[in-house]
Image 1 (tube, rainbow, N blue to C red):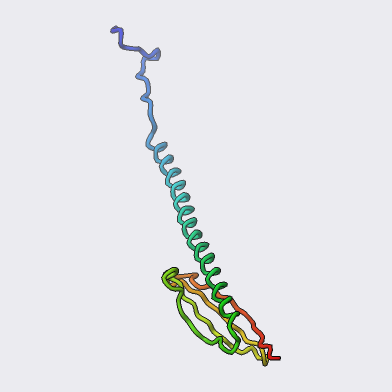
Image 2: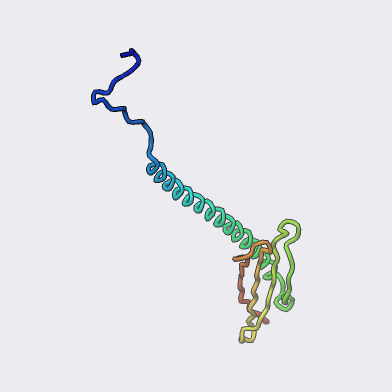
Length: 134
């Protein structure tokens, strides 16, 4: 017997250390499920971040434009549309003025849109304004 050979007391060859094919396949399946969940969560997070950015920007732009409309005399507020210039090139606004059925009350509807977004791209503010002629 050579000094480097180790004999098994049972006379059999020792089992090879390692993983079976089944163990490797189960580990790969668990890893695949975990990665799909992580990527889906990341994608949803990016989408929600974009929507939050739109809502924040559109709200501030709509409030600013509505403040401009409130500063005007009611007779000079009319249906109109436009954009917000170079600072916000993807955003546009539209004003619709309608009667409410009340003699001195007007409904002013302001819609701010982001032209780049495909869905959920509009934010609307509605103001009811009275014409108080004294």
